[in-house]
Length: 246
Image 1: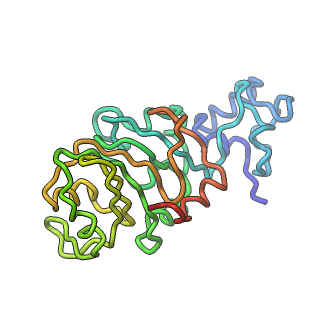
Image 2: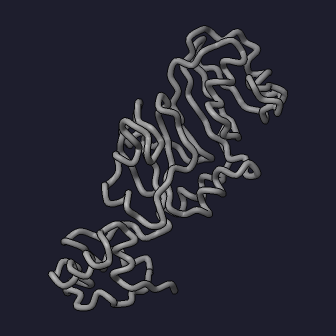
Image 3: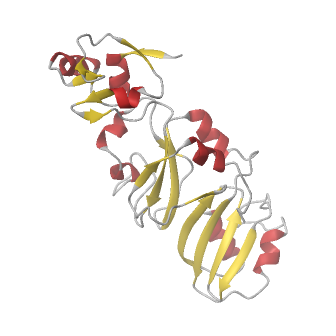
């Protein structure tokens, strides 16, 4: 089982520099199994139960490295570490921005798109989800400026549609009309502004866009915009399930 020095672990989780963590330990702010930790160099087994056993400042330990979470991305928030304006990372505990390895979005949603956004500090998981070889389906709810004409579904499913400025055709996508101006679209790629550009290619304009599902993982109805939730092992597994994804 992997082990880590206590001061290194807490520093990597964003609690402060190793010196600051050592000062916290000396002040009695770090407890293990209810008793103050005396040695900041204590080696801990990074088992699943350490989250409940180790407390910092009276609060439970933050998730260990390898965390993954879902966020209900609100309108007007940017998926970036550095751009101007409100960022998705501003919606998370401030300490999480100092984690090492860094917490990053799995793919991006543009500023005007809402819905299910995944974040992780697990590079292997990130690349597994976004890998073109995986064809992980992503389902969106689109509200359109003009009524559907009826042939869009066939064009999207053809595998022949090309986006403006690109030579390589899109992989087949599934369109589910819900009303003349609303539809669900399931894609298995992640090209730049893909859904918006697909509707533009058939002469329409997306007025609002919301991602509802990745793989077989749905955005929970009780997760409000701006809120986040840690993923369980079953949630991560659902990302790679396709049953009912279209």
